[in-house]
Image (cartoon, rainbow, N blue to C red; front, side):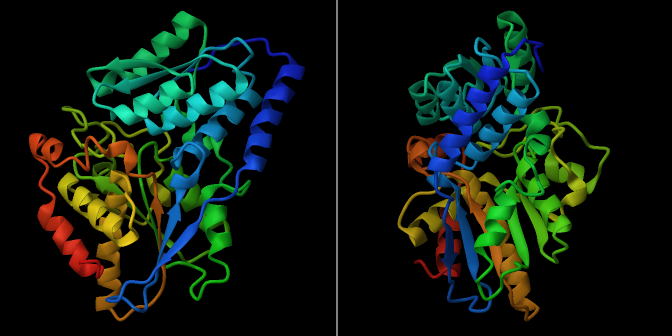
Length: 357
């Protein structure tokens, strides 16, 4: 939702310059190579997005959304900025709002992890919690009307705010860093889907660069995206999305989700995501977030299939954020038991599979 505003060109130039200067001060995120003994011909690479200033993949999206809104004249020096988010996007957007001296309100599900809420407040953002996650869209639009502000609407604008042809988007960054590896053109890139913006960017970039790389999207089993991919007539979940993995999975097909650029989707149960998350954390010696675990389940399936077919090649996936934000949820055994998440067998399986036991 946009709010028509008269924006001073001088202020606009200054605002964009501040965002670009912040970007220039930041180094690119690391690409970590992981060699798994069971798959000597299939090296795994983790694009570590947790090293952004705000700690997650969503830092890239927030930057793009602010630049998109600024260049469209939707944000001025007195604009209140609103976003609907499960946390990480709002953390990053609060960071950029503070950079520009703007008021920021995050409309979040009441179940959002407390450390994410604390991070939003740390950057000066305000929290508007809702009990029904399906209401975040309408509530955000209402707050934009009431404040005369602008609803950034990541779910609509994620796929168009990012320049998928270049400008250091995540796809360009990945393939540039892969250039000197033994398999510079990965067999697969694996990502999750929250808005659909990341998969749209990577899928388009792969086609634009005429690569043979295929794109796999890992999706919580309780999400709509993989159902829509299999049957385009399915666009909403009547009971909402009950997945417990924050940041990915939705109850409706978002405008930024572009299934035509995806080669394969893998539905993943929450407990399996948690188990893979914990196993990878053991392998790396540091905690990762739940959506990274979801990605790793899909990676494991692809690796097994490639090995059974005698294929070699690399796989790239995303380390979406760090695990410290989930100390009171995904890394709390009591919380997992309370929410009926059974992860122990999955963790043991992946520890053995990846040689980390």
